[in-house]
Length: 184
Image (cartoon, rainbow, N blue to C red):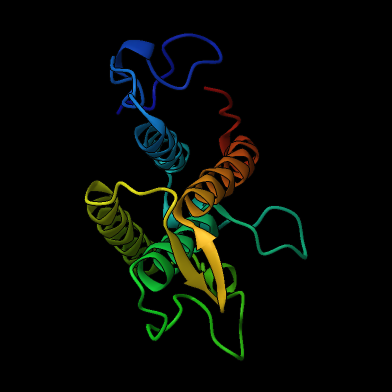
């Protein structure tokens, strides 16, 4: 995708927007999945064409919020909800979180190209795993164990959409602080 603006205020040419597929989702699962897919793509767009320093740039001290931190955090979110909870593997270690540093997803988001590469690779792997699981699942009313409490799959998917929506909003503001790009 080109970083050149097509028109003032537009991120990319609407005809080339990867979030617009030309199809409408049918049913609840496909609708939730479509929203999740669009927010994931928006995260990628908001981080596009930035170097390691820009991605790791923190918002407002003492906050550790950065675009790179958001990528790492959302990889952690995908991993936790899809692998640990929905796929029933609570024994898996949590990503980017230790007893010493529960915010490692953000504090470890440093301006190093290797850290950036690892974060994107991890996020993409978690998204791929989540999508593979979701493709084979149809019962949104089913419940899974979440720390000893039954939680409906539907509720988890709605939560994931909410999580991405909130953080993509953060990404809008972070990106605007870096180079003034807004919108879409």
